[in-house]
Amino acid sequence: MAVPKMLKLPEVLEEIGMSRAAFYRMRARGDAPRLRKLPNGQIRVRRQDLDAWWETCEQAA
Image (cartoon, rainbow, N blue to C red):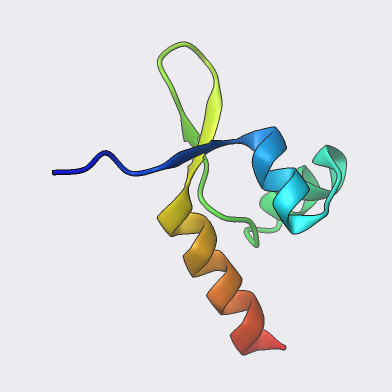
């Protein structure tokens, strides 16, 4: 089984073209892709979760 691609938060922010502050405001509203916190405290987003989030954004537009 392949390991899912995990993106660092700066990579996600660059891809969606958003500042960290705006991303966390969106997350507080429940509108952001799912974040995963690793045991070392770093934050990652699975590529699959980000792609699914993009789909919901396109459907809402």
